[in-house]
Length: 155
Image (cartoon, rainbow, N blue to C red):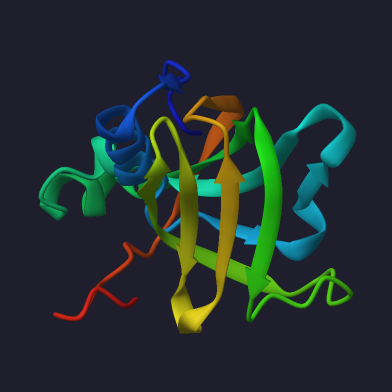
Protein backbone atom coordinates (compact mmCIF):
# COMPACT_ATOMS: atom_id res chain seq x y z
CA UNK A 1 0.00 0.00 0.00
CA UNK A 2 1.21 3.51 -0.85
CA UNK A 3 1.17 6.02 2.00
CA UNK A 4 -1.08 9.07 1.50
CA UNK A 5 0.60 12.09 -0.05
CA UNK A 6 -0.73 15.63 0.05
CA UNK A 7 -2.08 16.58 -3.39
CA UNK A 8 -0.23 19.36 -5.19
CA UNK A 9 -2.02 22.42 -6.56
CA UNK A 10 -0.05 25.05 -8.47
CA UNK A 11 -1.05 28.27 -10.22
CA UNK A 12 1.05 29.94 -12.90
CA UNK A 13 0.60 33.62 -13.72
CA UNK A 14 4.06 34.38 -15.08
CA UNK A 15 7.05 32.70 -16.70
CA UNK A 16 8.71 31.80 -13.37
CA UNK A 17 5.54 30.14 -12.10
CA UNK A 18 5.33 28.21 -15.38
CA UNK A 19 8.91 26.97 -14.93
CA UNK A 20 8.04 25.58 -11.47
CA UNK A 21 4.94 23.89 -12.89
CA UNK A 22 7.01 22.50 -15.77
CA UNK A 23 9.49 20.94 -13.33
CA UNK A 24 6.67 19.13 -11.50
CA UNK A 25 5.18 17.88 -14.77
CA UNK A 26 8.46 16.74 -16.32
CA UNK A 27 8.07 13.15 -17.56
CA UNK A 28 4.29 13.14 -17.18
CA UNK A 29 2.68 10.67 -19.57
CA UNK A 30 -0.71 11.08 -21.19
CA UNK A 31 -2.86 9.82 -24.02
CA UNK A 32 -3.89 12.05 -26.91
CA UNK A 33 -7.50 11.31 -25.88
CA UNK A 34 -6.84 13.15 -22.59
CA UNK A 35 -6.19 16.50 -24.32
CA UNK A 36 -8.93 19.04 -25.05
CA UNK A 37 -9.19 22.56 -26.44
CA UNK A 38 -12.49 24.43 -26.03
CA UNK A 39 -12.19 27.53 -28.25
CA UNK A 40 -15.50 29.05 -27.09
CA UNK A 41 -14.18 29.06 -23.51
CA UNK A 42 -10.56 29.84 -24.50
CA UNK A 43 -9.51 26.81 -22.44
CA UNK A 44 -6.92 24.07 -23.05
CA UNK A 45 -6.81 21.12 -20.66
CA UNK A 46 -5.18 17.74 -20.29
CA UNK A 47 -4.96 14.93 -17.76
CA UNK A 48 -1.64 13.16 -17.25
CA UNK A 49 0.13 10.71 -14.97
CA UNK A 50 2.93 12.79 -13.51
CA UNK A 51 6.08 11.37 -11.98
CA UNK A 52 6.35 12.46 -8.32
CA UNK A 53 9.78 14.14 -8.47
CA UNK A 54 9.50 15.67 -4.99
CA UNK A 55 9.39 12.22 -3.38
CA UNK A 56 12.07 10.72 -5.66
CA UNK A 57 14.95 12.56 -3.98
CA UNK A 58 18.33 11.25 -5.06
CA UNK A 59 16.69 7.96 -5.99
CA UNK A 60 18.39 5.66 -3.46
CA UNK A 61 15.85 5.87 -0.65
CA UNK A 62 12.90 6.15 -3.04
CA UNK A 63 14.10 3.09 -4.97
CA UNK A 64 13.66 1.00 -1.81
CA UNK A 65 10.14 2.33 -1.17
CA UNK A 66 9.24 2.62 -4.86
CA UNK A 67 8.87 5.68 -7.04
CA UNK A 68 5.44 7.21 -7.45
CA UNK A 69 3.12 8.64 -10.08
CA UNK A 70 -0.20 10.37 -9.68
CA UNK A 71 -3.03 11.59 -11.89
CA UNK A 72 -2.92 15.36 -12.46
CA UNK A 73 -4.88 17.90 -14.46
CA UNK A 74 -3.36 20.85 -16.30
CA UNK A 75 -5.51 23.73 -17.48
CA UNK A 76 -4.68 26.93 -19.39
CA UNK A 77 -7.18 29.78 -19.61
CA UNK A 78 -7.27 32.66 -22.14
CA UNK A 79 -6.01 30.46 -24.97
CA UNK A 80 -6.52 32.04 -28.40
CA UNK A 81 -5.34 29.11 -30.50
CA UNK A 82 -3.54 25.76 -30.51
CA UNK A 83 -1.01 24.34 -32.98
CA UNK A 84 0.12 20.71 -33.01
CA UNK A 85 3.44 19.29 -34.19
CA UNK A 86 3.84 15.53 -34.35
CA UNK A 87 0.59 14.93 -32.45
CA UNK A 88 -2.10 13.06 -34.39
CA UNK A 89 -5.51 14.01 -33.02
CA UNK A 90 -7.16 10.86 -34.37
CA UNK A 91 -4.57 8.57 -32.67
CA UNK A 92 -6.46 8.75 -29.36
CA UNK A 93 -4.51 5.94 -27.66
CA UNK A 94 -1.07 7.35 -28.59
CA UNK A 95 1.04 8.14 -25.53
CA UNK A 96 2.98 11.38 -25.11
CA UNK A 97 5.71 12.12 -22.57
CA UNK A 98 5.92 15.76 -21.49
CA UNK A 99 9.49 17.05 -21.17
CA UNK A 100 8.95 20.76 -20.50
CA UNK A 101 6.73 23.80 -20.88
CA UNK A 102 8.27 26.94 -22.35
CA UNK A 103 7.01 30.50 -22.74
CA UNK A 104 7.85 32.96 -25.54
CA UNK A 105 6.57 36.51 -25.14
CA UNK A 106 5.07 38.04 -28.25
CA UNK A 107 3.54 41.30 -27.07
CA UNK A 108 3.60 40.88 -23.28
CA UNK A 109 1.61 39.57 -21.62
CA UNK A 110 0.49 37.84 -24.84
CA UNK A 111 2.70 35.04 -26.11
CA UNK A 112 3.07 31.33 -26.72
CA UNK A 113 3.35 28.44 -24.28
CA UNK A 114 4.88 25.36 -25.86
CA UNK A 115 4.44 21.91 -24.35
CA UNK A 116 7.47 19.94 -25.52
CA UNK A 117 7.15 16.15 -25.72
CA UNK A 118 9.66 13.36 -26.27
CA UNK A 119 10.17 12.38 -29.88
CA UNK A 120 9.82 15.92 -31.26
CA UNK A 121 6.09 16.37 -30.67
CA UNK A 122 4.84 19.72 -29.37
CA UNK A 123 1.67 21.63 -28.61
CA UNK A 124 1.89 25.41 -28.95
CA UNK A 125 -0.71 27.53 -27.19
CA UNK A 126 -1.27 31.15 -28.24
CA UNK A 127 -2.24 32.81 -24.95
CA UNK A 128 -3.47 36.28 -24.00
CA UNK A 129 -1.34 35.85 -20.87
CA UNK A 130 -0.08 33.01 -18.68
CA UNK A 131 -2.96 31.70 -16.60
CA UNK A 132 -2.56 28.02 -15.75
CA UNK A 133 -3.42 25.58 -12.99
CA UNK A 134 -2.03 22.14 -12.22
CA UNK A 135 -3.92 20.02 -9.70
CA UNK A 136 -3.44 16.45 -8.47
CA UNK A 137 -6.59 14.37 -8.82
CA UNK A 138 -6.30 11.41 -6.55
CA UNK A 139 -4.15 8.78 -4.94
CA UNK A 140 -0.57 7.97 -5.84
CA UNK A 141 0.64 4.60 -7.06
CA UNK A 142 4.03 2.98 -7.12
CA UNK A 143 6.20 2.63 -10.18
CA UNK A 144 9.54 0.84 -10.42
CA UNK A 145 11.10 3.14 -12.97
CA UNK A 146 12.52 6.62 -12.54
CA UNK A 147 12.70 8.55 -15.81
CA UNK A 148 16.26 9.03 -17.05
CA UNK A 149 17.54 11.75 -19.37
CA UNK A 150 20.56 11.98 -21.61
CA UNK A 151 22.56 15.20 -21.94
CA UNK A 152 20.26 16.57 -24.63
CA UNK A 153 17.29 16.42 -22.22
CA UNK A 154 15.47 13.59 -23.97
CA UNK A 155 14.07 10.62 -22.04
